Amino acid sequence: MRSDDDIFAEIEAQKSLNKKAKEQRKREDDAIASVLATKQGREVLAWILSMTHMSSSTSAQDALTLAALSAQRDIGLEIVSRLEDVDFDMVQLMQKEMRDGN
Image (cartoon, rainbow, N blue to C red; front, side):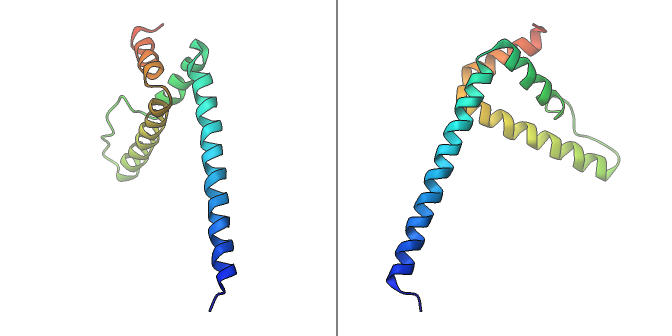
């Protein structure tokens, strides 16, 4: 049986971990916003996203190829979701710049 001190220490440890995770998320969000704020940053993100095949079909005859393409696309979708959480308008601008070739 655990003592009450152990339970309270565990609660405090979890609070500390949650606080650190929240601070890390904030640092990441700030960095993402900084990258999205520049045309060069948006170009780099667009290039990275182009490697995830988000805008192309994931159809393939080979099951392994299909699985790999699907996984890459899922990663791209996850990245875009995070980018949109940080700054939806800049992501829209990035996508417009990608379409227009600017």
